[in-house]
Length: 222
Ligand code: SAM
Image (cartoon, protein in one colour):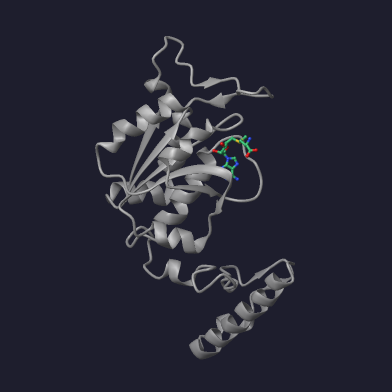
């Protein structure tokens, strides 16, 4: 999978994408991530990417020209999905991550300030939100989506079954059972005995019960 990201803050991504599973996914050539600095596509010597909104109002708006130009440059290669990160877009969730994981390439446009000149809608496929709240830019949402999608690409996770048990992998209501590790007792808190029993049938039953309990708690939003 190839990910292209259009941003005015290209350095934000360095540390995160060069650590953990995304670093491994890139070195195994399962994922490639390309950051495009929108500023480089500006014509003026100050590399101005924003301007005041027509009609007035507070803040600045990202201009369409440098975004269009950057997109055109990478469009020479294969593009299968162009996503505008937008708090009012379609809600990103596990089902959407599964669909994206089947694609060959995705492009993310990160907004900043008051957003992007609305004519950007003419050149995108989808507007996607990572939740009903407002962040200062699309960079964190792009990282969130790229990580969630990459985890579902075969070979990216260390253990092939890891993603199969994860929360939401078996439907919107499915939540993974609780996990414990050493020590057996910490302060007054002991690991449930059944997990130490070595009885795999009993363990599977206990885990099923925990999943059911977690589901009903989620239903009550607690
Ligand atoms: N004025 C815009 C509004 O009211 O919808 C908010 C702009 S926000 C400060 C700047 C940029 O951050 C947006 O253009 C978008 O790219 C990104 N962003 C903020 N919150 C987001 C979210 N929940 N999901 C996806 N992108 C988000």
